[in-house]
Image (cartoon, rainbow over all chains, first blue to last red; front, side):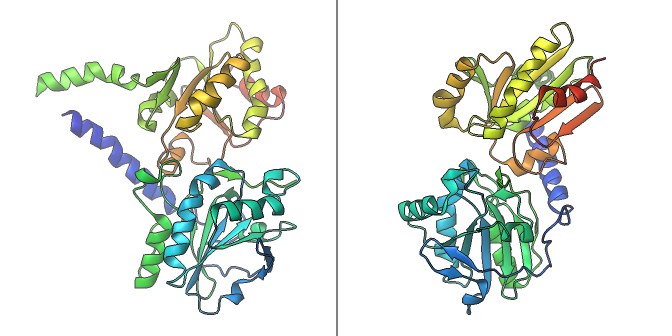
Length: 204
Length: 163
């Protein structure tokens, strides 16, 4: 009996999640699923300027707004590394972009980005949204905040990386990986939008 | 069957309150355990603030929220600070913070990391960052998606609940 009662709320929870992940695609400004994402030219921690157009053979991009200081971004660092190591060879590189104003958060300065990238051995490009022009064009509001693009730079998924920021061991749904798998099979991505839980992007 | 159901019903309220207390601060593993706090049907006004010690804007607005206690000493207002600090920060950061700042409000810790599954149950407008504050009394609800920058800003909304 107890088991049954315990299960019922879980079921309702699942439905609530389903409802929200399918209804909020057009909230606010910036990109929605189906829009074409703008390219950019941003300086990376290795001193090179990077554009999406540089990745000639890419089948897509895991564009991730992230940073040094946010505890949620830090919690996802290792998962972002794994994501890149698994999916970059398959044509889907992680493109990490720090959108924060370092005058507000000194931890997120370009020098500190370089330090963090070196400490963690980031295998992906880590770019600085200097002047904060890229994140508003995308409509990102959080770190971390993922925009999964296809080869034509069409947005296919927006939101969180998976369903458990705090505990990688307890993750049940890997939103980004599922979205890539669905893209590969030509199936509908479901959900194609989740709320990106994390820190607000810092600007003046 | 009947017996076990009855037993469950009687034990349910206890079960709901059975959060692990860590040095006096109740710790909830799942939102489900905390959910009843968001649906009390009585004449008390509940001010429920989500925060964490690592969240700068949250810490900056806390004094305004604490001021409620001095402003309304005789009113039925209950302030609950739901900390989203991570497990390894409870002893090292949260408890010292509570002590140092002599927080008068009730502090509880919510560890449920499946944020996407429960933030909409607090309010649909919650877009995934803290601080947020829910003020409610019975059926009347007001959700604030940003930090307060003064006590007056908070009080404007609170006055609508407490005459």
